[in-house]
Image: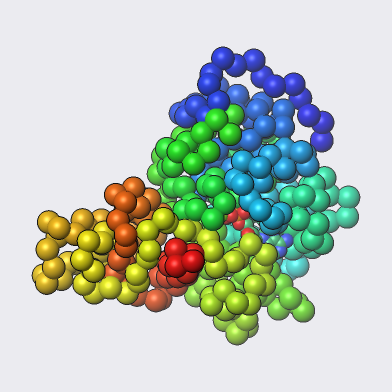
Length: 334
Ligand code: TXA
Ligand code: MG
């Protein structure tokens, strides 16, 4: 699709804007001009570009400092629009009807003649699509009138952003503007599903727990989370890395660490010496997911040698939370 001239604006690059209609229209004009913008979603903030404009998509990789071209998720406003870019099977359509708008991404064969750029798909014959639920994301995609490619708006390998400030601190003037949609409700990236030999396969644990998807055969084909079997490009272990070392499953934090707690504190350490950042005082997985990345950033900013993390139950949303924590721990160990 054609690129438009940049909108007149005397705002500094990287400015954080409330999601008013005028600001959304301005951000949409930046996108149609081939620029990149910080976009709130219900999962994490996205680094948005016009998916049909290869050069705009290249700016995403440039801004993130991504070493390689991973395929990106393309965000659209409806299932009808998604069907213009991908060939849906019956199960995919049923899932889209059930979970869209929402944090489910479907990887499907790209439709012949789709305007989505090769770079957004990293040259693959498939395309990853989702319809976000966040009102500001929907408004921005609608106002742009194009599919929007958006990976998480963090520097490559770093912790995903769940507030507009996180985006500003990672990317600053590399983005034209950031729409402030408040803290992300889910706080974890979307769950990604694809198909292989007509069988559904879970490509990434995420904000919709796998057991809620209730697809026969899905559990049999779940992506191994040891990071060795990379089925979905980009699902490498060295993601979500804080600067400090991470120690998982700590009932009691190590001395001089920062402790990410879950549930009530055990009485056998001195919280006056070891800063405690609660992931969820009540021990709720949904609250923990929403707070996880912000808590990791907050802990890292205190500059400890080690971030200790309390054990998180490995069911429901806890599966995706533990997946992100393992990746962070593995990345911080290298
Ligand atoms: O919640 C989310 O999904 C966020 C927000 C911004 O929407 N976006 C996000 O995008 O997490 P990103 O780029 O960080 O993750 C995209 C991942 C890739 O790393 C890859 O694993 C998978 O989606 N993916 C994309 N296209 C694919 C394809 N054609 N085949 C297999 N996997 C694909
Ligand atoms: Mg990411």
